Length: 452
Image 1 (cartoon, rainbow, N blue to C red):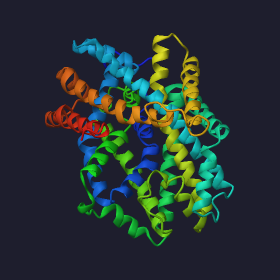
Image 2: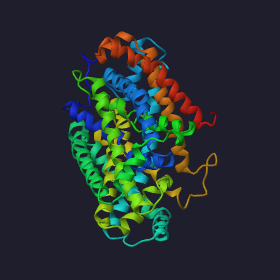
Image 3: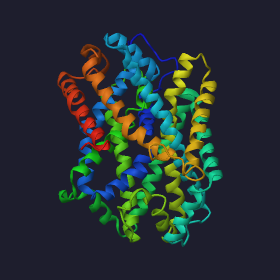
Image 4: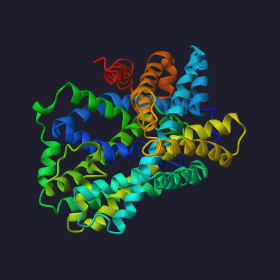
């Protein structure tokens, strides 16, 4: 199919452009916000080692599979899975896998944009000296005042959605590619600057020891499952983003090598974030395992009380915004592509519809932190419900099904045509994607359901 089909939406100009785009999709709040705090909660070095092994054994094989499916189908995830199921002569209901990814990306962006809005707000708070000399109580009040204000949350959410759709509206080469060519190098530069600052704190070596000196007495089954789950989620798998980006990949580019580069870059960002953050945490006598509040309620205390904290506080939250934006454009792209293909829309019309619906649901998420805080479904707020549905149910199911389709449903000859691997490499990938990855994702899924 690859030789005769090209996406109507365009193609990436080069492998480097695709690597930047897919890395941007993978690099997000999970790398800068979540990875450092779960590393802190799970003892540091041993957890990092387990996480890296899980990226190799689970994340990369599924990423190769998702890119391969996207390039083979050359359409939005829904239409791609329809075409591939027909080609493989299997049950046509496999197209629901495409729907699962598109809907998951839409739901994730609706609350992701609210959290990204917090980061935009904190850029300004840092810029105008809001952290200067602040103690824990003042920083906590600052965060509480932000999330309790529906006007502020809706404003920042709206700004972020508008920026996302303005980029996506320009298309593959004019919007997505141009954006990531600016966002990703800038993100790496800011991270390197923050690492450079961390080296001056006097606690740089302690931070490195915490991250890279494994103490396996700190590892239990929960830590292993957390590492396994994060290795899967951090690569942006199972939500249609990598599949639709793969549909824009030229046929002469090696999928396997490209997936290795993407996973490597994503992992480097997560490690650099930890290398930058932990010395700052230790230098200020803070706890590395302080949980989800590490970014918005713990680090601002450090930025407000350290030399150069104004500059590095601003840089850090700009970094967070850029990471969120590089992910958000990939989250909505599958829905936009489907509307263009199936509803005869111009791209700008598809952006208005997809962005507008995302914005409306995001407003409900923003309200769930304040005026609708008493509105619950299944004992969860709107935000918590969407987070649970996507991260704990939809993405694991999506990743599991991608692995099963690529490993068991797709004709082996078609997979070989797309991947063009040496026989030994192809056999290893088939083993991992057919057995190891599905089993691991299934165990993570059972864990989030409380079965194991």
